[in-house]
Structures are given as structure tokens and as C-alpha cells.
Length: 224
Ligand SMILES: Nc1ccn([C@@H]2O[C@H](COP(=O)(O)OP(=O)(O)OP(=O)(O)O)[C@@H](O)[C@H]2O)c(=O)n1
Image (cartoon, rainbow, N blue to C red; front, side):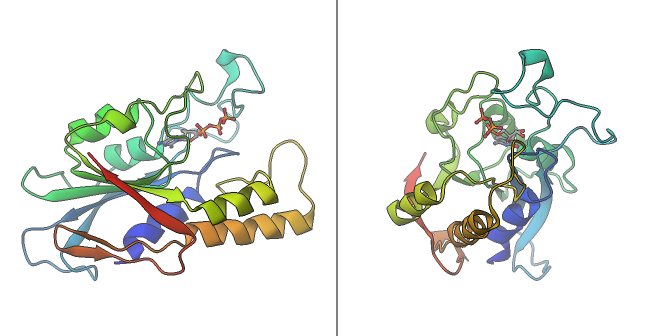
């Protein structure tokens, strides 16, 4: 069952965004007895944030808000992890089944209605950027989303303090665009990322247990 939580984090490393990697995986709890190694859960789809399928390297801008004018920013071109997971899913989302989305970053305001409309019943995510409005991308609607069970993991105060001490780091494991960090800082940030991403969550929900080892984060409130 731990793979349900690890897969989106691994997918985030495949991102084409030079700064922020996001991974999303959709699982469904099958009514029938089929088994693929994860009990009654079966994989519906997965994705990460990337430029449109078929695009070539360098075809689209890679800048974020702080670097270039609106026309040349990445936001309007990158397809979000959740959008890719929904668009390229290999199974239908069935009304009668419990379908869960695991995503490494808070769903943005564009993705929230898509996720709900697709029939996802549970969302497992983090509080990364939750409540923020960055102009081109905002994260305001997730909090008030109704009709979907939300499980949100927040950084523990210990991990947050360590994170602040270690300075900024990149969620996708890439080196920041403007200047490389010293090797020591990179190693320290890498260890911190591993600690924070390796969190323990025990959630009894709809008859299954989600259990990830080595907690660096704590379970947040169950909302919605
Ligand atoms: N639920 C989400 C939220 C964001 N993204 C992706 O995450 C990246 C944007 O991350 P964000 O942290 O919002 O922007 P930054 O690049 O960090 O911008 P800033 O410097 O303004 O913080 C984009 O590739 C976007 O496609 C995603 O796939 N799924």
C-alpha cells in the first residue's frame, strides 16, 4: 500500500518544469476481486507536470513569475500533473467505486473543478502553496471544495524549521536556474527532501490502510 504514496513523489522527478515537480496518481478501489499486487486497488492513471505531449525541448517558455513578462512565462503552457493523470488515464472513473487522487502539491484553482467533475472521491495532498494567489496560478479554491474527502499533510514544525535553516530547495531535484548551490548545501537539501517526503501516514479509509515509513511530516486535518 505504501506505493500509493511513493508513486506520485517519484513521478514528480520526471517533470519538465525546471523549478517545481508535481506528481499525481489516481487509484480506484475495485468492487470486484481483481488483484494487481495492491489488493483491491487498481491504477486508473498517473501524470506529472510537463509541456504538451509531442512538444520538443525548448519549444515553450520555461520562466516563472519573477523572470519574464506574462507572454513568456511557463504557466500557460505546462499541463498540470492532475490534468495529465486525468487526460491520459487508462481506466474509466466509475461512479460506484471509491476513486482517489494522490498529488504532491495542493491542486490549483484550474484543477479543482476538473478533479471534482471527473468523479474523484478522495484527494490526498500536501499544504504546499495552499491559499496562495501567485497571479498566473492560484490555490484558493481547494480549501472550500465540497463533496470530496480531503486528506492534507502539513510539514511538521520540525521539518519546517529544518527547511528554513537549509534554505530554498527544488521539489523536482533540479538545480535552480540562477546559479548552483554549493555541493554541501545541495546534499543537505537532498537529505531534507528525502526526510520530508518520507512521511508516515496511517489512514483508515474505506477499508484500506495507507502507511508510509519514516515520518518527516505529520498528518493534517481531515477536511471536507
Ligand atoms: N496542483 C498543481 C499545481 C502546480 N502544478 C505545476 O507546478 C508548477 C508551478 O508551481 P508553483 O509553485 O505554483 O510556481 P513556481 O514556479 O514556484 O512559481 P513562483 O516562483 O511564483 O512561486 C507548474 O509547472 C504547474 O504546472 C501542478 O502540476 N499541479
